[in-house]
Image 1 (cartoon, rainbow, N blue to C red):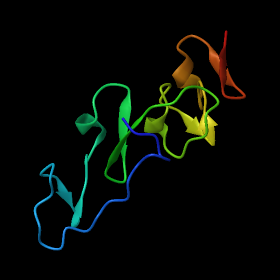
Image 2 (image 1 turned 180 degrees about the vertical axis):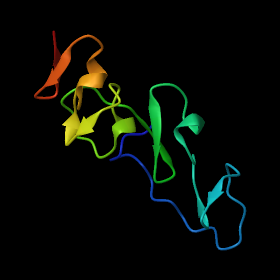
Image 3 (image 1 turned 90 degrees about the vertical axis):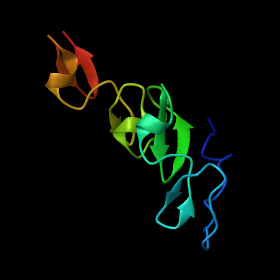
Length: 94
């Protein structure tokens, strides 16, 4: 999967068929949802990206391997993310 810096801009289709066969709102895309990207990847604006680890900047929860984004990928955002522990400053503690 491409990193954001390597991703190509989506090109308008102008009535042509997209090479990969996926057209989203008039633009060629590589995905419509995370399901189209494979494991440990996510779909953002029609392009698949690799999920990132704790501490890496993010914009959406599904960009993080942990599933939790709070400016950067974090271990938790609420106690329910920690099983038997509690979420304190975005880290699970027992």
